[in-house]
Length: 53
Image (cartoon, rainbow, N blue to C red; front, side, top):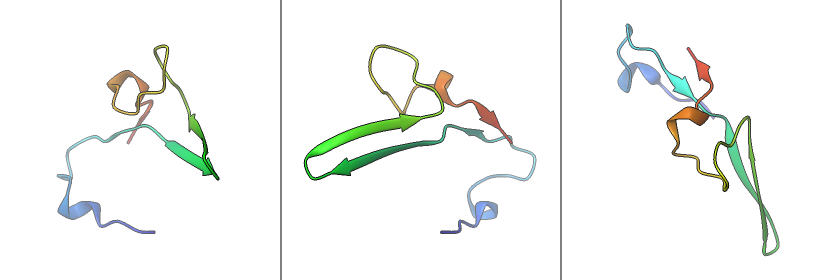
């Protein structure tokens, strides 16, 4: 899948990225990420966005 970031982000703006996924097998879900800060997975926590581009 490709995204045209020129329509979303200014050229002088840095991106903070957290790579994460929720994988579901039947009814079981697992949470995967480069980091999870806190007791539970939370993909909205800014301190989990560990890649800056």
